[in-house]
Image 1: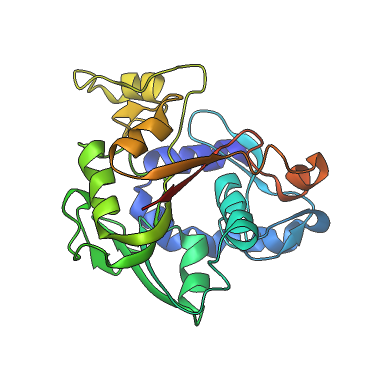
Image 2: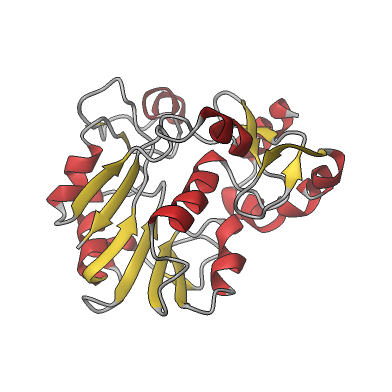
Length: 255
């Protein structure tokens, strides 16, 4: 199964995967029914999650019911336990490059004025270049932008635009892949070959690989950044139960 998913990720355009992959994968919700793992996004309980990955297939990664990956399950728990996302009476939210697993759930929340935006995703309602966000300054209470900064031409500009449209006192979660063995972010515009990009930046459409300095890069855009080790402090049995990325830091960004 892992080899099949890896093949699809490499050769089927992402926009089509986003639109249609949930339909056949729903079958596995019945096949894998059990109580070993649990998805905090959709609350389904299964014997195991599906494997997933481009370079190497990760076991127990993809929820077949809602398409949540490890990082999405972590974000769902973090929003519930560490933020006012579910309890504030009203929040205006901008979700850049929205993940399929969250869209319907966030749209159904009565306390949210929820806007999805992206330059090419068929799931987003607003077509938007993150280098020029088409909203006034101080518009949003919350901004989500996950696994985007590694793709954009100018991540400094993109980060600054998110900071600009966030209200004073507002907050965001802005995650990106990181190489924790490297102190500094690495980018090289001369690397254009897809295979070489995949080797160096972990994916053929990535333009850089962030290092341990990612939080400082966000701070340069004006954010007050909390590097939250939420999952690291979580009991091991819960990390396994929810199949979370055990070493991931949440970048909680405030204005």
